[in-house]
Image 1 (cartoon, rainbow, N blue to C red):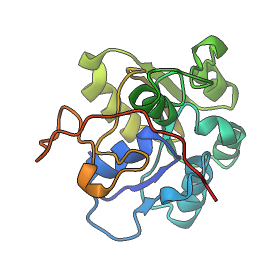
Image 2 (tube, helix red, strand yellow):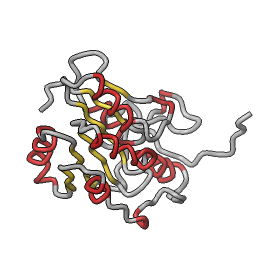
Image 3 (cartoon, one colour):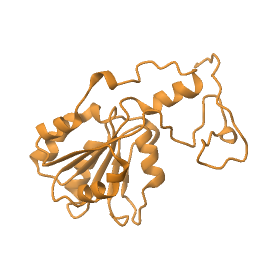
Length: 205
């Protein structure tokens, strides 16, 4: 839909990895992310700055439900200046990246990664901050239609996409592992079968 011309910003988490893997670009300086710095909340203010700088381009913040909470108040900045920023939140009701590590390396002992009890309604939050387009996507069969109307909407737009809380992002390198031990998951062909294992005690310093 964007033909690779959009500026894409991200927060930190699984959504960041998926965006890097699946979004195509045809121009330089179109990918704004904090990389491995782990700066949760980076995506939305980065998108705001990018839209101020490039009014002629579509700017998309691909964010996660945990990451965007760090700077959720900036939704008001978007509508205050009527910036046509497109904000998409991949909502797995938790800290997906941390949950993935807990699932793979700590025997599924989940600690502080489940946000489902908080019942945050991101659509109401976006509407309260003046977003004229605020939609929740829950059915895969609606994906193509909703994505197109979201991107083509003339003005600030907010899209919440409900995703599987147990979805994992691959490839990944586990604690104490080398690149040769990279875990590729079920959808990526691997030369060797690497099995996730619980990490032992380590000394940081």
